[in-house]
Image (cartoon, rainbow, N blue to C red; front, side):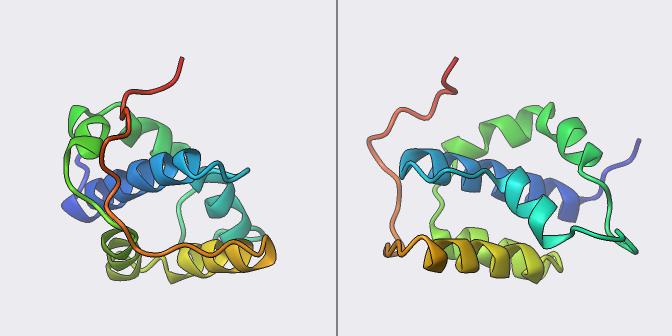
Length: 114
């Protein structure tokens, strides 16, 4: 399977977003956002099976070693045509009455919790 760079960048951004959501203890994941954003007919969107495949790529897993902010994650979502996912994130954050500023995540253990 030939996976283009846009899908890789999106998968990396979703991995970073998951880490961010876990770190600030939000009760949902990037996959939850994906499902909510694209519920109903998928039309030209892919099912979430591709997320599982891309998550196995070493460069996606190592995405946490790169510097990232909420801005870089949002920028990648927009550039890859996934504004709906970003809108769902904003909606959930507002609904939960959570406020947070764009920030680098430093000093946090980036290894997956087992």
